[in-house]
Structure formats: structure tokens, C-alpha cells
Image 1: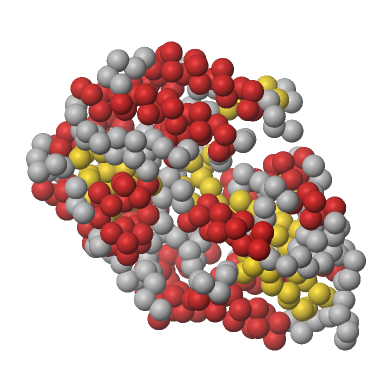
Image 2 (image 1 turned 120 degrees about the horizontal axis):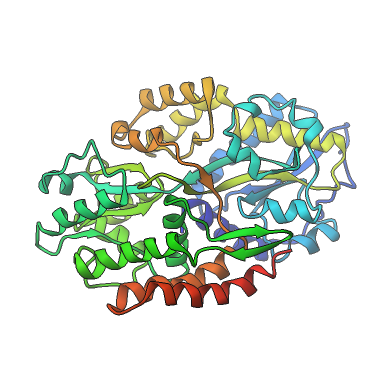
Length: 448
């Protein structure tokens, strides 16, 4: 559903095919007194460019740190096998975690407490606070964020111009989206003002983004348990807005039950005005669906009371010795959080024809202060895409909120809600939400 999730899914497929290798913290040093550090996140050989970059980084890091021996492993953390790998001493010393993982890992004491060590990690305090909070609890730190995305509004600048809209002042509210969608649809020739996903858990994922944008939630904590929190005025507001655009305004097209590839293809073909997306959608539209970077803009999520964020970071095996924790944080900081390598990384990607200037890796948009300023300056200097088209997204500052617990099960239920509103003119938002909450609460009750 986004680059982080797709990369993680690919990693999970690889994990199952890898030979089991002991990665426990039992063997701290190799001959010669080196700290032996197993790490995951190495791209598969099928991703030749990314694998080359990773392996080059391992060699460069080891040359600069001759007392550390990096043992890279393909794949990422698989929640289904994580506990067994940890218990069996087969979990890497440094392991990848998607933003939805840390809370439960921390609760189960399955990640090392690095509070006393992270203070020595350069630039840690310049990472955005809400991202650091994903890997922390009760004042203690258990991991470090390394990349993230947040949802915004992707729009077709060419269609905006054709419809008499100013592409440099995109919609800031859902009401403005509704009005812009009318003008784009009025162009005719099968133009669609706004599109939305509703299958394969993607409808529930985007319903969550809508709820956050208007200040709502999908789930909230009630004491020591989670409960659903969308059968309310904000939930009805979201569904009614979708229903109005679909049936009253006729700005969402006749074809429904869409998934991300359908919408990206519509955008690439110049038939779609707007949809909710993260920045990584833009290169996909260009590369897979023959779009042009100059034709697209990205702005902050409408209404802007909150936005869905996701991403990745790294945590450390709870059995790791202090020496391994220190070495692990040195690797994480050098590889993923090193402003001194921004320029080199950007040029490596640029030399390979990768787009530079979008708010996506190779230099992740996780920073504040001087590091962010340096990052922005270098991106502009190396840009291969029109940076100005995405400035309003970068400048937007909605509160970042992660996905609800047991997100995929929740999304599967919410898919039905979004599908009903988009396919049934007589669908009742209040009834749909009440029925969905009754199904979501047992799923949230499983959260430990």
C-alpha cells in the first residue's frame, strides 16, 4: 500500500526462504576481538541497485570501524516468526521494525532498552519528536526511526489548469476538494475529479487517513484495552462527504472497487484530478504508467487536523550485550541518520537516474532544525524533478498518527463500509459505522 509496506512484504517472503542462521548475542566477538553484529534489511539480489548500495555501505562502514564485523541478512522482521526466532537465538542483533510493530514489542520486552546509549547517537534529538515517540514508552527508548511517509493529497496540475484552478494553490479543505473535483469532472472526456480505494484493505486504510484528517480516530485506549472510535459525528462526516461526491456530485466516476494500481493508472493517463497518497506514488505513476513529474503536485492532507504516518526504524535484540548495542547504534546512525552522507547518497541515486527532489528516501524526511535545512538545500541542488510542485506538502504540519492496532484486520472490516457508500446510493453511514464497530471491537480485544 506504500513503499515501506511493499518493501516489508517482500522482506517477509524472503525471510521464509532464507537458511536459518544463528544470530544470537551469545557470540559477541570474532577472532581478532571484533564485535560481530548481525543486521537485517539487506535488499535481495533481485533489487540490484539497492543491494549494491547496501553492500557498499557495509564495506565502507567496516573500513571506518575495523572493530565491528557486520553480518547482513536479507529480509525484515516477520511478526509471525519473531518470537520463535528470539527464543531460539536466531534473531538478528539489529532488526527492522515497521511503525506498527514497536508498541507490542516493547510491551512484551522483545527489544533492548537503549535509553542510556541513544544519547551518544549523533543528531538523534533532531529527528521529529512524533517519530521518536513511536519507538519509546514511559520515557525509555527502544529503537530509532530511519524513514517515514505521511499521507497527503496528490493532484494533476495539468487538469487543474484546464479546469481554471490554480495548481500552485491546491485545496486545503475537503470542501475545497469537493469543489475542485466538480470543475475537473466538468471537463468531460471521462475525467474523474477524485478517486478512492475500497478493496484489499486499502479502503479501510484510506478511511483511517480521512478520519485523522478531520480530527477523528479509528481506535482509542480505554484503560488497558483498545476500543473502536469511529461510530460518531466525524465518522459520519467522512462517509457523507464521500457519498455526496460519489452520488450527488458525480465526481468519482462510475467504476468503483478500485485499488492503488487502478488509481495510479488513471492519474498516469491524465484522467484523474486528485487522490490521497504518499509521495512515493509519484515515481510509480511516472515509471509504470508513463506520467510526467511536471504534471503532478502534492499538498498536505485536506483539513489538516492529523495525517496517517507510517515508516520504518531499527530496534536491537533484547539479549544484546552493551558492546553490541553500542555497535548497533553506530551502524544505524552511520547508515541511516548521517547528514555527512546526504550529498553522497543523493549523487549516487542521481547517477543511476533515480528521481531527486521528492520528499522520499534516499534522504528521508524525518528531520528538524539544521539537519532538515541541510537536507532541503542538497535536495534542491541535486533535484531532477520540480521541487516546487511538492513544497506545500513539505511545508504542511498536521499531527502525525500511526495506524490502529491489528490494522490489517481492522481495514478489512472498514473496506466494506467504504465499498457500500461508493456502490449503494441508499447506503446509510450511521448503520454502516455501527455494524463495523461491532466487528472491529473483537479484533481490538485481541491486542495484548
